[in-house]
Amino acid sequence: MSVTVRLKALQVLFPYVFLFVLSLLIFLPIMEAATERRLDFGSHIRIAEALPQGVKSESHKSVSHVLYHAVYKLLKAWLPQHEPSNIALMAIMVFVIPLPLIIYSILKRNCAGPIAAPGILLLSLGLAIASPITFWADYVMIGYFNPIVYHNPTLIALRLFAIPVSLLALGVFSNTSYRNANHQLYTLLLCSSVILLSTLAKQSYTLVLIPGCCAFAAWRAFRGNRVDWILLVFGICIPGSLMLGLQYLISYGDFTNDSIISFGVFAFFRYYIPDWRVPIQLLLSLAFPIAVYLLFFREARKHLYLNLSWTVFAVSAFVTYCLYETGLRIGHGNFLWNSYITVFVLMFASVLFLVQQYVRSRLDVVHQSMSSRMSLKFSISAVLLGSHVFFGIGYYVRFLIGIDIIK
Image 1: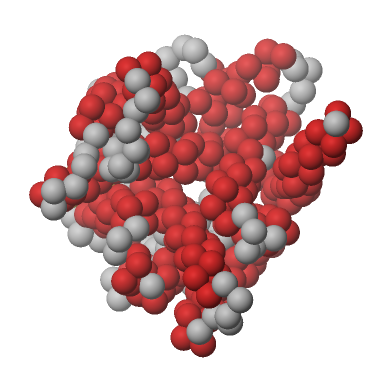
Image 2 (image 1 turned 90 degrees about the vertical axis):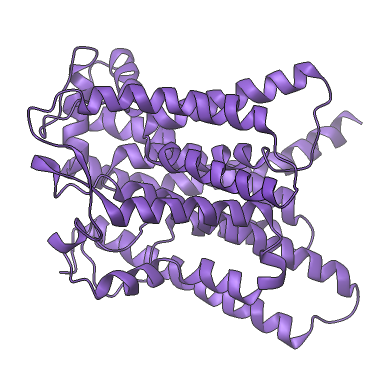
């Protein structure tokens, strides 16, 4: 009996161990290249080295999202003999390695059976490296909404929390009930804690999640659907807003550099690309999620998580296209990060929806073959997802060897 239990435990653990090793082999070289070239890592290393004193970046902006820097500081205290670039590499791998494992765990729970473990492993790694379908790009890919950015450690840190936060936010709209008061309290504390950690990693997702959830809640309530207002208010809005307010005071409390938030459609993008390219690059960034929603429209419009993800993305797109910073930070594009992270969540939500539809279709037909129309829908979706992964591999290679395609 004990031998059987051990064998089952090994069968469960093996894919995670294999995925851990594979993720290490894939992401360690690219993150090492990013830390050695410094790019955004250079400024964040200097910021982390200076903590906990009052710190300002080169743009005179006080740093308020310090989770990556805190991990760097802890590793530096533990391994003082190592070079800063090595510490930076170890710190970022803390956030990089668990992400494919989280994606794998969620997908496995939703598509066990019809999709074998190797297929789920490939989907998890594909989502971790997928990028826009690019025709004009350098390493920062201005104009695209890029879900994977190797040169910015804080966005990489945020990616670890974005999917769990989005799934916790889904609890506001799902029809599940609490077992008792303790269960409700636990859910509230878990949600607020993850929201706070996410915002400390980078505030970009919380900034659009709160208005996105509120808009989605208003629509659901108008339609007569259930909304867990307590979880929305006390698990998401209050902790997220308080942290965002504190970060705003830290970031914009000193206006000596004349940097304020202003409104202007495409104002930031005009520094880098012509207006006509903006909608094209948006479509190329969202080819897979758009195709999935249109191809499976009847089912997609009823899918809570997918529609919540689209709502939050819509808020982020408005923020990205219409808000910008004036003064010395006008060319920094700090509102790009909102759409980058929501596209990552939207890609995941679209894959999750797609595998759920695939499982459902396999169960419906039982021993019959899938209809040609349904098979075509899945094939088109798979080709587009594969295109995002293919261009993600290209972006990985370009970044790794230091080749930029001029925009």
